Image (cartoon, rainbow, N blue to C red; front, side, top):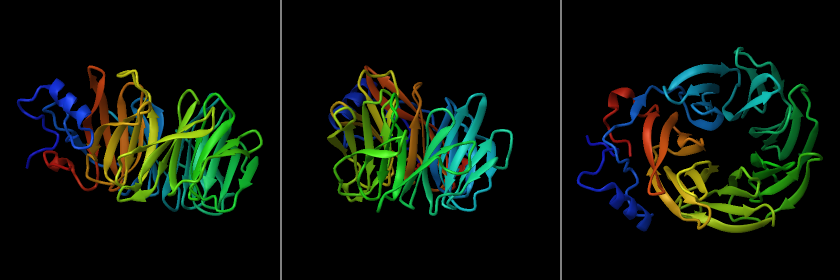
Length: 365
């Protein structure tokens, strides 16, 4: 069988990029300008990967419905460390450095948050004050972290204390995601009530609510300068399925980024030096990876899921390396390159339960 990753013969790269920019929604986005097939590796998980947490370039954490957390070497596909202990799906995972200690925090459908050390395979603390699924955890300064749950509460913890320092419950606020806003004391939070909220972490008071959207808000992310935020919307058949850009200084909605055809599960600001424009990376239930420009809200690159699976999460490093993850234990390493300031993606490696190494020449698009 042919591979969707093969270079198109007799086509100049500059012409292909020009076509991609001119026809952003119809251009085939599996072009990689390379004859190399992606490396197909054995999956480190056995079920859906629900979340990605960055440690440093080349090392990321993943949490899965198989109830485990893995420290992954992105370059080799190796499972460096695996932690087990949750009794249900892991929904969120992050790396936290506090003074000289290095920790992993994980949230789960088992309603607990667990704190792990890199040299121990059992949790050193279990935080069990949430009553329903813990959907999100977010790094704060010093020893602090925030959490959100389907129990409609947001909490702030000190890692050294089992009980929360503060807790805020809001009716119908089924929390989906929390993101810290850099250079401020604020966090942004999305919810199934379709409203993105801003909290002051010093007292956990809601300082602003943006206008209600038409669909559940799945995920939020703040820019590194703390000036903008984006929220990912649910939906289907092109209804909803947008990324909303907010101005945090003026506290207003700017515009929507539309192009996904199903629910957008994750969208993040992408640090990069290929173009002077600000790039947003997104993935969703339509099984695509997309790049957008913040300034004009255009989709400038669209890539099919490397394994043909629904994608749940994504993260990008400043060196152009990107990881995406999703259903069927999908974990893919992509690289963002550029020609004449135009970015494009190339899949370097992939792993999934629906494509094993012996099928490395098979088309998964």
